[in-house]
Length: 256
Image 1 (cartoon, rainbow, N blue to C red):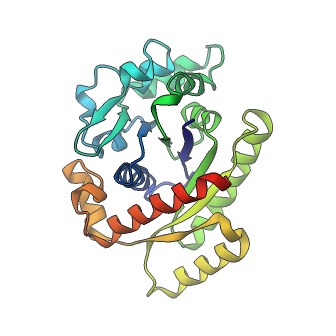
Image 2 (image 1 turned 90 degrees about the vertical axis):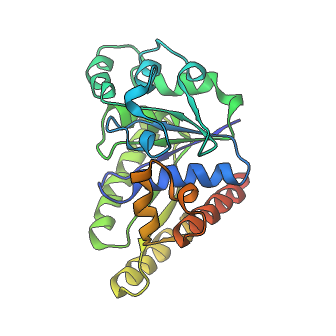
Image 3 (image 1 turned 135 degrees about the horizontal axis):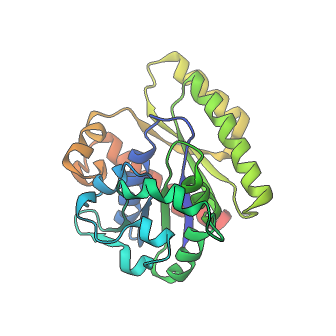
């Protein structure tokens, strides 16, 4: 049975898509069968996985409107060694079209159920806003991985996200929980980041992943080459950290 995780944070610019594509590549590197679902109309996770969003014949849009299955729409990225259910600008229209449909928040969940045996992990890259698309992701997932920077405003954004997860858990998806907080773009030389990191650990305990993703130039460069950092430069510190994170996640699965 596939483990389905949303990579989500209601605060923008926290490295959410970078975390999603690099975790997918890291999991593929340690032998897992991975599907990355891009739920953001910008299609950054699609492009960052070596798939051209402009060339997509079928996308997550078709899956949500039930005109295609995941088997038909997912593309295997040869360079990255995982499957991608891509997104492009069309997806912005799905917001409006889903409003009047039945089971509008369960569309992705039902589609993933049909492909359950094909993957070990499904990672869903959600948009930063709480929209019908994000809701589809949260209703389909077993849990949420929250990438966050160790800064003051990030703590405020985390409070909003925790409240959203509680509401979805209570009303729509009783399986949903926070799997863990991933500290990203971390610079140990900055005292404030150390302090926020310590606050997170004291408040959330073992919900904070042990792996820390350092601030890394090669990770930032990789998207311009249409690749995750893990594939673009496997020797970079950031890339190695994501592979370690993938291993930590696989080890945690039995206890989740």
